Length: 180
Image 1 (cartoon, one colour):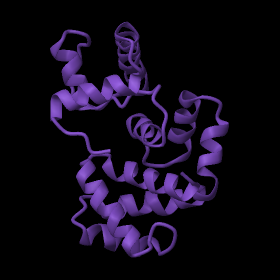
Image 2 (spheres, helix red, strand yellow):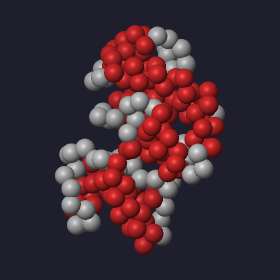
Image 3 (cartoon, rainbow, N blue to C red):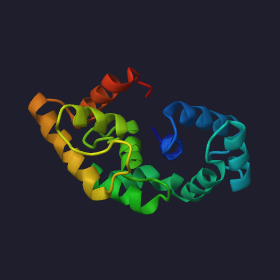
Image 4 (spheres, rainbow, N blue to C red):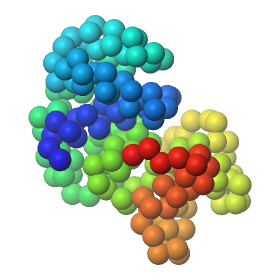
């Protein structure tokens, strides 16, 4: 897929932070229908998000509007990073509103399967099986995120799976859904 589609995925991931994938999908569709992904003001984006029932329309509109500067070269910059972990670090540093989980989510959606999407569902499964000791409802620092990802990497290796396959399976175990 081209840079425009990669940017659409980035917007989806910006919208799923502290929200749901369903809400992100609905809002990306609405933004696309009104041609606000590539054009439109920050205010128009915020209004579209608000009309779509999004929880944080103003802040996410700000992030989307600001991230638009990266759209033409997003794919090139991610691919040029060398590997997915360097690409993820670049995304976290250069896309306001994108943390470790959503940067991993973005990379997964564009075809990288060697990073984990460590969300509360994954953390619950790992805690339930005694593999980590943490509260899945609390935020996760970079250090803790990478530690949990390391646990998942070890488990994926033991099972002969990619990290992406494993965390998708664990997420499905906890939610019963696969959306993307």
